[in-house]
Amino acid sequence: MTALEMDRADLARHAHGIRRRVLEMCRGRGQGYAGQGLALADLMACLHHHELRRGDDGRYRDALVISTGHSAIALFAVLGELGVYAAEELATYGMDGSRIEESPLEGLPGFEITGGSLGQGLSQAVGIALAERLAGSGNRVFCLVSDGELQEGQTWEAAMAAGHHRLEDLVVLIDNNRTQADGLTASVMGVEPVPEKFAAFGFAARRVDAHDVDALLAAFAQARATRDRPSAIVLETTLAKGVPCLEEYRNTHYIRVEDAVWARALDELEAAAP
Ligand SMILES: Cc1ncc(C[n+]2csc(CCOP(=O)(O)OP(=O)(O)O)c2C)c(N)n1
Ligand SMILES: [Mg+2]
View 1 (cartoon, rainbow, N blue to C red):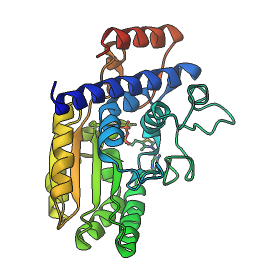
View 2 (view 1 turned 30 degrees about the horizontal axis):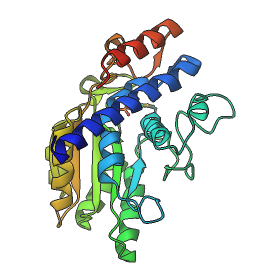
View 3 (view 1 turned 30 degrees about the vertical axis):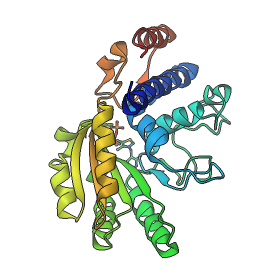
View 4 (view 1 turned 90 degrees about the vertical axis):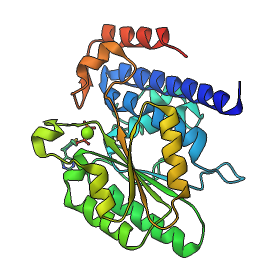
């Protein structure tokens, strides 16, 4: 096996581990943002096990800003894999008194901003990227936003600022799952063509299959090599990716099902283990 093939095999195992944690987290109360967690597992594996840099003290140098608060489940799951959160604590996802909230609070390990009110995160990521530039740190800032958040004006104000300031260390990751709480994005208020819109705001923008690890790594490499403008990676994601019995919920914002379905989902995932 070449080094790259080993890397790919590792990333597939990490993505699988993230998916298992997402299902275990939702099984506790029988509900949660499993669709988004499963859909973002490959991205989180590539980010945390390949792209984000850590300092000598083990702390992250590069920031990951989760603007789509409800998609925090994917970050909790990868941080669980990395030992930042214990499995027992992750199992309290969404429960009264738990800090593993469906939309997280700023200051929690791994979380830069408070989630829940959508459409604000890119503004905060732009502010962080400007501050890093002023400090001369060379640290990079990744920001996850959803297709639903592209319907909010603040997102585009932030994109305009990023383009104006040529924030080359900012990478916007758009979870383009074509779905939002009220149905299909195209029927609520269409957002396409997304790459062309970001390009018009001064970004180097490209669309990728978010379940193809090679495509994700190539997009990250291109963003790293782009030195005169911010980057936008439009991620074509599929809700509930990797678990067939949950794929019927692929147009569903939130999944609440009986324990038997979660058990079956875990069985199906294990059967497909890399
Ligand atoms: C400012 C704001 N307006 C409305 C909502 C209610 N809301 C919660 S989720 C959601 C759908 C957003 O679309 P998207 O993030 O694409 O959803 P997903 O694809 O993850 O289902 C909305 C409108 C909110 N959380 N914040
Ligand atoms: Mg969406």
